[in-house]
Structure formats: structure tokens, C-alpha cells
Image 1 (cartoon, rainbow, N blue to C red):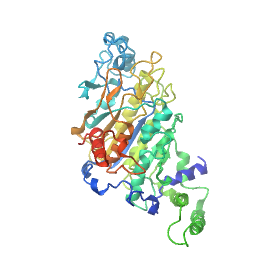
Image 2 (cartoon, rainbow, N blue to C red; image 1 turned 90 degrees about the vertical axis):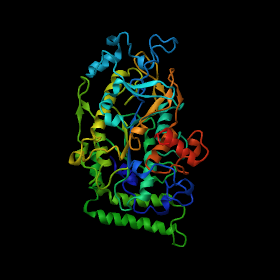
Image 3 (spheres, rainbow, N blue to C red; image 1 turned 90 degrees about the horizontal axis):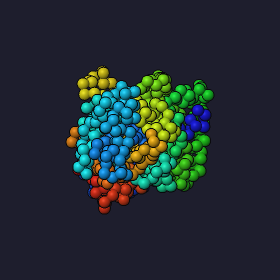
Image 4 (cartoon, helix red, strand yellow; image 1 turned 180 degrees about the vertical axis):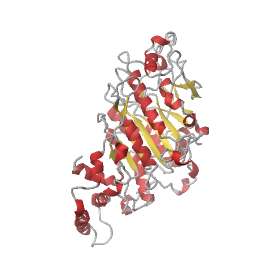
Length: 516
């Protein structure tokens, strides 16, 4: 990592010391995330709010049909409609010849039952269909405590390219919108205004650039109309060089003098852009951000106490008979669990862009155009296994629960830019499919009463009742007690069928989180 890149990261290292007017919302001087007086009573009670969020972004799009939305009646080989035969759950599985089906062969490779497709009954959708969880969710199905706090939300939009769909899914805004800010930026902004002004570590982190093509994944760091200081800190599975730079070896014992000199230079410029050398700098937001960056770099060594280098130790994993490979999800999720549960400076938001254990034919993660079953079975099985290994079980108490994610405190979101097509592409793959897929919520405000499904996907794979990505982002902020409606955030029009902020908040809470 070059020094220039380290300095760019410095904006997010801990710029908490002088939030001041730079971070004031443009809305009547209120802090970002504070609800206006007429809507103060709307929202989740404190005991149901999530303290932090872990977002797993399944890059490329999970196959919906073998995972979170298996409807046995749809797409059967004998479907009366010839256009629907052998689609959805039955694309790679023929119940009349299970042993000869590609899906069964993949399940056998991974040591899972394959003679008869084992589906887990979950809930009925808005069309009254019995939706079952597919065999690729075996690690999740084995955790009843987590299943009891699972909510599946049907999602739909019309953006097929990765480059357009990824920003929309991560930010709830399309490319070109000045308000396109990632969820981490909103959370960081709110935490900086309400948190410890002396904190050195950031509140929001993003793990990406893990061998995945660009495809606008930098949207996971977008700040939109927020100040640049709310940018989440970018980390990778291999961050040894970054951790070394936190100690600033090039400056060495002259660190204090170096920092003092930089601060002096900036103070001189500050004086020149203040009216009669009084008050705050005028129209100099970039100067204020530079000042915060310098203060952040000066305290960068303190972040080293949070990011223990041992957490990034390389992990090798062999799965389903394959050769051992570097397990980036295992490394990243281990670091994330540490950050979310840190006793002194816990993170409030972590986004992990899942590259998978093995490379997909489309370039990474779950982008499986030529071959879907084997790649997605391995990558999803690995990610779910690693994720759930860090989620506390009910029987784990005291010291054995230390460092484990508590679903009473943490909301886990399984997000993606779109799903995969209900029919095959090139015989064994699936194409992009934004017209009906799912976003999954685990824990946080999701209790047993909220368990289930919102919406429905029909026999042709198109969602008939659904929410859009913007409403998902609105609901995630509400889950943390952050009012999302502001110039830097979202508007009433982002929640369909509502007329004011109160109605929008209530609708998002009911549809996405099941509280209404």
C-alpha cells in the first residue's frame, strides 16, 4: 500500500475530534438521523433496535431457487406451460430421476443427502404458496436458533448489469445520483455525531477488493452528500502492509513534531478563510476534511490496538473434495466478528463483499453464467459456515460467548445486486435476474414474531409483491434507530404508496422488518 493510499484512508480512521458544524444536517440544524418532532413516536423501541449491522454482500447474485425460495409446484418437468418446464427449483433437479440430476451430484460431492431433495418448510408467501429453504442452505438450516429469527424479503428492480445494480443495492440510489451513499456512510455519520468525540477507530468498515472485478463495488464506500470523513474504512483479507503503516515507521520518533507542523500549516490556512479571523472557515468544507484527515493520521497508531495483526492470518480450506484454497471469507468474517464485539471501540457497521472460496466463471462470488450448482454450493456453504461459527448459540454463556456475535444486538443482512434467472443459461448456468430475488435479515429486530416472508415470486420468476432496494436501506437505518429521511438520506418517494415520512417509516418497518 502506498503512502498516498494510506492518507486517503485516513479520512475514515477516526475523524471524530471536531465534528462541529461540518456534520450538522441541513435539516433545521438537527443532527443527522434525528426524527422531526411529529414523528418521534414512530420507530422501534430501544430494546428491539440493532446496535450494529453486519452486511454480507453476495456479489454476483445468489441463486434464489435452491436457497431461500424453493416452491416445489413451480417449474416442474410436467408443468402445463411449456415455457415454465424445468425452471426455478427444477432447473437442475428432476424429481423423477434424482440421482441423474446435476444438483444431486453436487450435493453428494459436498456430503449432503441427494436421493430425495431435502427442503425445509419455512413460510407461506403473499400468493399463499409454501416456500421452502433449499439444500444449499444446510449450515443455516442446522441452526434453528438463527432460523427462528430469519425474515425473507422479496426484492425487485430492473437493472441487469452489475455496474448499475451494485450501487443501487448497496446505496438505494442509482448511478449519477448525488445522494448515492452507502449504508456504512449513513451509520458512520450518525455515530460520529452521537458518539465519543475522542474515538480513534472508525464506526464503519468495508471488506472488498478481494480478487473481484470492479463492477462499481466502490459504491460500498460512497459518501454521497455526506462529508468525506464518513467514508468507511476499507480493509482486505491481506492487510499486513496497512497494519504496518498504521505505526507510521517512516516518521518514527519525529511523529509528534511532524504532526504539529502539519497542524500549524493548516491552522494558517484556516485563518485566511475565516471572516475577520473569527468563526468557522467559510465555504471550506474540503479544508475541514483535510484537517480531520491530519488529526486521524496522527492517531492512526491507536487503531493498531483494535486491528490485531493475528486476525489476518492466512486460512486455507478444502471443501467438497476440492484442493485447499485461501479462505478470504473466513479471514474477513473473523476480523468482522472481532470488530463488532470489541469491548472498547465496537464497530457499528461492517460490510463484507463475499468473493467466495472459489472463483466463479463470471469473475467472482456468485456470478455463475456457465455453471451454477457447484460454485454456489461451495461458496455459499463456506460463507454460511464461517458466518454462523461467529454467531453465539443460546447455550453459549459467559467466557465461551466472548467475541461471538449476539443476534439480540446485531442485525445480519444478506444482500446482493440481483438473483439468478429461473431458467438455465448455457445449459448449466443462470443469468442475471433483478425481477424477483430476495434480501434476507437475521436477528436484530427480527424476533420469532417477525420470522417469515414478505412478498411473493410467481411461477415465471417475476416478483408480484416486493420492495425496492431503497426501502431496504430505509428499513436498515430504522433498525438502528436512525431516522433515514434527510437531504443526505432518503425521501418519502423511496417507499412506495406513502405520503409523508411517518407513513414511509411505518411501511418500511412493517414490510421489511415485520414490525407494524
